Amino acid sequence: MKTIRDLHSLSVSARNEELLHAFWEARGVFDAAQRQTLVSAAAELQPAGQVELLRGSPLPGVSNTWAPQQSLPQVIEVSRRMIALQTLLGDADSAAVVWMVVRYPALLTADFATLTQRLFDMKVAAAGYQVDVVKVVIKQPALLLTDSWKLGAAHNKQMDTARIPRSGRSSTPSNSSSSSSSSSSSSSKEEEVQALLEAWSFGLSNDGDLEWDLRCRQLAEYVTEHGDASAGYRDGDDLDLSRWARKQRSEHHSGSLSPLKHQQLAALDFRFSEDDADWQRWFTTLAAFRRVEGHCSPIPLVSGGDIYLMNWVAIQRVARRCKVLGEVRIELLSGLGFDWDGSDPLS
Image (cartoon, rainbow, N blue to C red; front, side, top):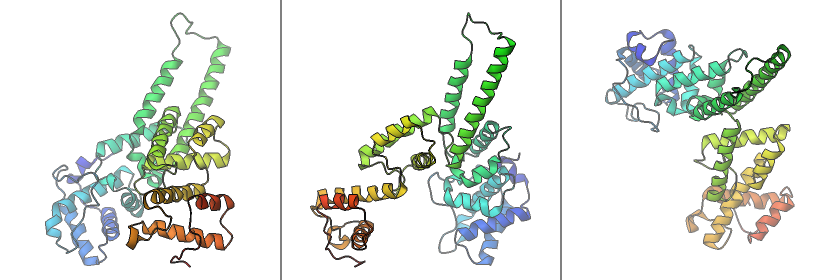
């Protein structure tokens, strides 16, 4: 497998050019001649590591005033990393690779050796189960950026240690017990892999006991900070926690969420309906607004209220007039002193 350090010795192929054209178009460079200028810059690829792309920064690119020479080192480095990512994914479809980077720009600034190792770990974990790990990663790029592999590895190590026979016990089981143990081990391994694959489908590296306990504690901290358990419905919410919350809702609806986990989530007032979770997020925000302003009528130009909150309030009034707002929600809003007769943009 070629690595990012090998790319300086490669010529830019037609496949690479297709990738870079797609990338720069996604970056807003719609003029074909300008895109070709940027793609041609990839021919000047130098040994890796000469230009640093800052983690957390926006997607690198040329300036809005079209002065590519000023950004040439960054353009070249971005080209190298895009080609490296496509190579790592087995020359995956250009559009798919670009879409991964658009959704997760950190793929361009992450340590490439780490990305490679994480992909390798996933392939090892799914070995023998006919899983196209590359397709999984393309759908859920966050799997290459999470550190939860360390947690999963620690959990597996603990499980392996627990299976080691204690001193004083026979380490040579009878044929019947050996066969039974082998069958049980195989079944257990298959269940572990299936659970792992399900977690991957939600963009989680794993959702074992250690991971679940960690996320549940994180959700409790979220409740303390925000006043509700609607993780994933606010700008800036932790992405791993948001994906984990979505997985719990899915398991609840499919009936696969254990009673104990359901009880723990319910204790945090976790909403198992996405609609309820979203509604609760805005209700909590409105309640906080009322505590500060003394009323429930946010008007951005007057009180500095959130325009999105103002729109949500308007929707509640319209929903009640149309008789589609549930009684429980009406009671909750009325309990805040909600003005049902107030004017709004949607009236």
